[in-house]
Image (cartoon, rainbow, N blue to C red; front, top):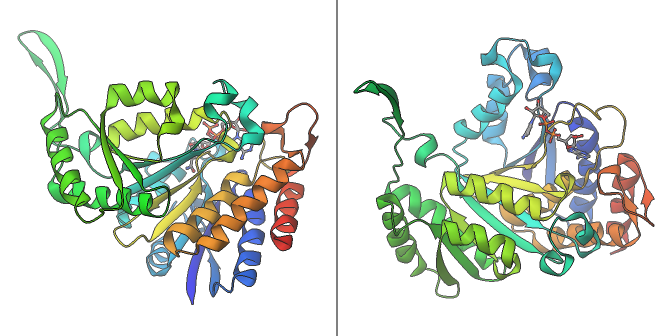
Length: 358
Ligand code: NAD
């Protein structure tokens, strides 16, 4: 029996989660996955219930779970509380407490939505790449970092450290992901300039010896940024450090033009993970029943694929989403001419119906 902890969060979180849970429950039944669900609160909802954005008992439940499915956190009603208790603090704490160092950000563009991208449809149609970003090391955490005055000038510096252990474990995630996809991995660095990147490249090469089936390439980050907009479909999996991954994953996600469609995962060393849509809690549309639940439904697919290796169930959910788009059903954020605009619940029900019939 595998346990999934459900954390709906704030804003549109509970609305999109309700639909994702219906899809998850059906997949559980249809593919005999032996999954049980438990629920708790994170973010503003946890602050309202427990007085903190991540209660100790919730953290314990998260540690004990096999995977976590999260909606989104945050909202204007918590903007004025003690900064240490803000909803986003709960999210950062659960990531760091669980050691979720591997951030997976797919950029997947269903051909039916190609017109939503700012790039030409032929460049992005059918785009399906996965960026694996190192999430707990590198320049965002490196010490020393300092701001000072030297010779009458203000100056500041940061430090970009990586140990071989940190590189090896994220490289392994990259190779593991390539193995369950198209077996192509591109490691992105700046090894022509940075010492940390030279170590990165060296260690990635060493890890490659354990994955003879994966075709490994290396690319400098400036070229990768260019290639992502020139010919993004050349990539399958990209593995890169914290800062490069931060920038490239945002760039790649915008190739798809639609934030309501993109799932993400953060994994630890045993592929235990927390899965969530890339978007936030969208307080501007919360409570109206119009949010797009597909990013959260696709997060369920990622969860089944990467934490439980339930490839058939994951594929089926993605196929069901594709069929619903084929039927011309769209929530407001992806609405296009000639399509039918539907509510959050109608979109969820359509995915459930498509999955049932597969
Ligand atoms: P946001 O992603 O919540 O919203 C940006 C825009 O996209 C809004 O116009 C929103 O209506 C729209 N949008 C987002 N998700 C959508 C969906 N599923 N369907 C349709 N439209 C959707 O970002 P924001 O407005 O900058 O932040 C709002 C709150 O969310 C803030 O409190 C912020 O801190 C929080 N946030 C949380 C997370 C997270 O939980 N991982 C991530 C980003 C922002």
